[in-house]
Structures are given as C-alpha cells and as structure tokens.
Image 1 (tube, rainbow, N blue to C red):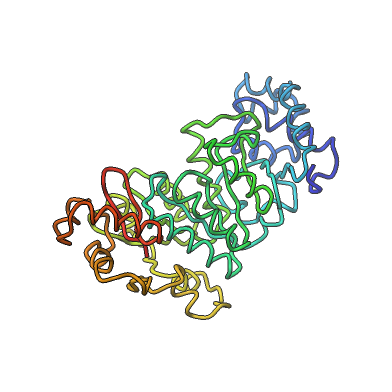
Image 2: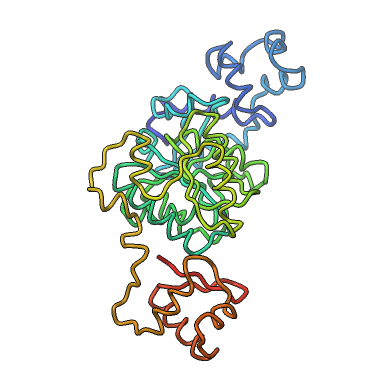
Length: 376
C-alpha cells in the first residue's frame, strides 16, 4: 500500500466513501468541504447530508460502500507498487487540484514520484498513420530527454507510440486509463502495461473491476490534460477523442500544441482545426520547450530534429537511382500503388519488389488498401 496513506483505517474510510455507487468526485469534494474528512461524512446525520444530496444518496452514504468492494481494493493494495492516493495526500499531484472536479481518489501502479514531475500530454488518433506513430515516438523520446514526463492514455495508435518513445529514452511516462487497474485495455497492450507499471506509472480514478465504457474516456481525458503543462496532438480526425483532451487542456489553462500535415489527410484535419483555434503549430521539440519556458539541455540539433535525421535526406547511400526515384515520387503523403506505378514507370513486379526492400530498410510503410507511406 502507498506510504502516502497514514494508516489502514484511513484507507478504509476513503474507500468506504469513494466506492459508494453513484457518488462522483464532484459530490465527494463538496461533502468533504462541508464535513472535513471521509469519516465525518460517513457519520454525518441524515438531516445534514440531505442539505447536499438526495434522500437515497444520504442513506447510501450512511451505509457506506459494499464491504466486498472495499475488501477487494484493500487486497489489491497489498501488491508491490500499488497505491491509493487521495485528496488528503501529499503525493496528490498539485496540477490536478487546479481542475474542476479533481478525482477524490486515484489508484496507481508504479512510481508515484512521477506525479511531481513536469508533464507533457501526447495524444492522437487510435488509427494513426505509420509516420504519425513515428512522430509521436520521436517527440516523446526527445521530450523525456529534456526532463519532461510524457502522459498519455495507453490507447492504440498515437498513445502507445508516445509511451514507447518514453520507455525507449529510459524516461518517465504515465498512462491514465479508463478502466480499473486490474483490467488492461486494449488487451493487446498487456506487455506495454507491464513495462509502464515497472518503469513508469499507470493511473486511474475508476474502481477495480470497472470495464471499458465509452463514457469513461472523456473523464479519463481531463486527468491526462490536468496532469500536464501542455498537450501535444500528433494526429486527429475531426471526431477524435484527442480533440476532447485538447479542449479540456485549453479550458484548464494548459498550452495546446498540434503537428500539421497534409491538407488531404483526414488524420490531420483535427490538428489543423486546433491550429486555427489558436493551438501552437509544432514542427520540432524546440517549439514546445520555448512555449513552456523549459531550457534546452541537449543542444539545438536534438530539439529541432526529434526524428534524428533530415526529413529530406534519402537515407541509405547504397540505394540505386530507381529506389531514389520511388521515394521522390512518393513525397510525404500516403500514395496508392497504382499511382506510384504511373509516376515511376516501373513494372508492377519491379515496384512490388523494391517497395518490399524499402519496407525492410524502414523507409516505407505499407498501409491497408494497397497504399504506402514514406517514412522520414
């Protein structure tokens, strides 16, 4: 159990209050402001509780949360690096206290000291392009090297790439999830979740056993933005949940950053919309460091080029002119195989073989539907 809980009895009182069905963080905060502590709330007369909640909830508060739920949480807290962080704890992140309806309790697995580090959120599409994932990973790696902790949601696509970049840099990363911490969602990220818990931190306001539900993720997003000094959106279509995170970041007084892209790609339309609304256009890490007034400790080259190379460089010097022709004709947008055939004048067999070689070199990514994308 977290060393932040002064004793077992205190943990039990917080759990008995926070696990009451239907009692949200906003109501808990209001009750605590009136009564002072969970035990005082739980022992308050019905008449006083009725001044703040309806009759059914007042009765539920006096009864406290179901004992099996409380015992389940206490059992989970016996795990190594498992923590219950409450509004009364010194470990509670100061940044979160500044937002509307901060979570009354946080379940945490990993290194809770990361909650005191300066953080940057990196979010984006679950259906990211290969280049988008590379951008997220590279920016995350570089930002970690400049002392920032990268916060994301452990979702598919950009989120996972951001966490991978942090781990690659041996940096700090926090995954804020929309389920209970005894559930890994998506399930294919079980190995990633294990690495984050081991070397970073996984965080949730949801009780154990809470499954993945659509309504959980906007609540999760306010914590991602609330923990952070700013929020970088890497790729987002107009319906992306990452735009919710960006909006919440703006409402919370955080900086909002967006990476631009092709005017033809639906994955960049959300980023372009954010830029039109005042988000800072980001081309390199230095743009973020300048806005957050964070000194560049690694030199201009690392901050100006998070991908580690000139995006116009045609990479392997051993490539012959036909390979270079393919890369030049691809540009930096997603292109269909048939279009590339016409542009290069190659035969279908030649182009297929050469694209496979470029994939093996890490210069090109195949995308569903017979499409390809050049990688910087």
